[in-house]
Length: 56
Image (tube, rainbow, N blue to C red; front, side, top):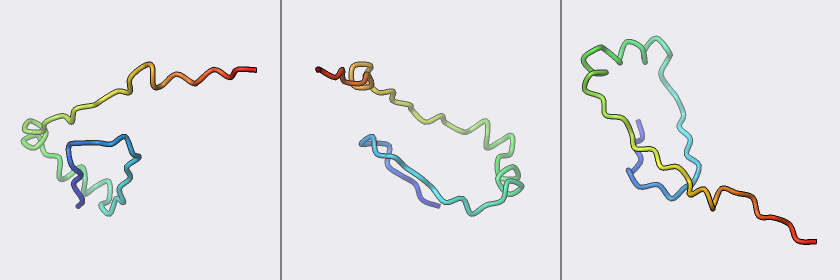
């Protein structure tokens, strides 16, 4: 399993899933869910996400 760094440069990330849904459900036991730490989500700056206006 590939683990990326905590730092993101904003590039798109994809992962190949080699486990079946049943294997994933079996992995996430109540104990593992209780110990899980959510990943920080960084939203884009609102000024950067607005489309540039076209000048005519």
